[in-house]
Image 1 (cartoon, rainbow, N blue to C red):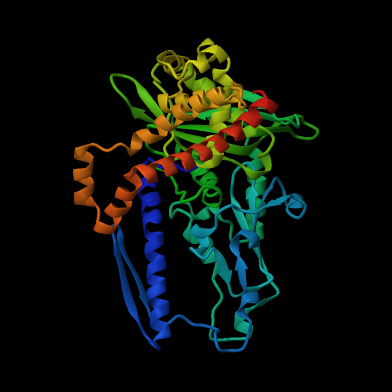
Image 2 (cartoon, rainbow, N blue to C red; image 1 turned 120 degrees about the vertical axis):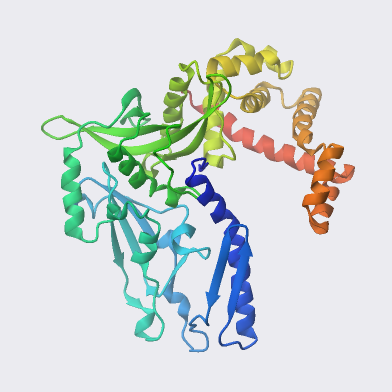
Length: 468
């Protein structure tokens, strides 16, 4: 999940989302000009955050009679990530594909100019330094000398912060040195706040850091290079912001012979502590990421449970929020919160039948730091899980209850319509008006209800199978 609220991160995240559509529009204009026979074109795409400029005619292999698709690789398939402890494990370590590549290779998410391309990024599993290895059987330049293949190294380096360019080793020897250096890494920074074992009995320990040193800042930034591969529109946070709390989870293994603990990075979470009122704070999840080799074994939920336990003990914390969370975090949080609320008397089966109550809201917030919006969602999940689906009356009551919540944001006051009338164009306002009509609203609510129930079923199945 990516929620960037730091001074640096939030603006970059917003800027990238806003410019993607503009880039596509400019490229479309450029292609249209090519179709009209233009040989040199200049376009400027204006938006809220800047200007995108395209000059000249991009080289093309069209009309050459060659099939250029063999020199175009899908980024998600071509890129492999490996996490290694030493040189010997570089060839044998399991590899993982990224989920997102657009920040490195553009909206097309492809790499041009190579045949049978494979890009392997080796990460030192304790210190998070990178070494890129690029393999291919040929390039487009061999057939078309005037066409240059993508410079993959430059594209990778462009996504590194300028104060951390040494994150990527420029040679294998340099990376070997980083692997040797990480053996001196004894104990993680911060305070250990919890531990757990995965379903396959691996041991994990969680450390919390509230004061960021320069060394730790660099370590966080190196780890965040992974976020660009696994969190949509991710960026680096301003770790000097005193509002941040850092949680790192490490896989703990014993060094052969000495039985000394070795801490391998397994994931991290960043929370930004916003001031609420008086001396209270409301932490908001900024980033949370579990490395791919540790997924699917319940580790994400257990990691979040340790974080939740830490927040529950803090009197200053009112509740915890997450704006626009990714589906993976949404389901993870639902599972953890539902598991915890099941232990509260306010969420008993009898109370669930009576509807969402103030007692539920207060108990979830005061005892578990769950915000009201999330506790309402928890109530709906648990009520659906415990109700008789074949009872028509029960299902009708539940459907009406959920739809009332879904309908609330659709209700517009006169002041709202006045604001929209001044802010939206005629076409945009027409769409909003259509959505507010009774027939359309009924259809929309029914679709939203069905989608919501399908989301709840994912959590319910997990609750019926696993326990924290």
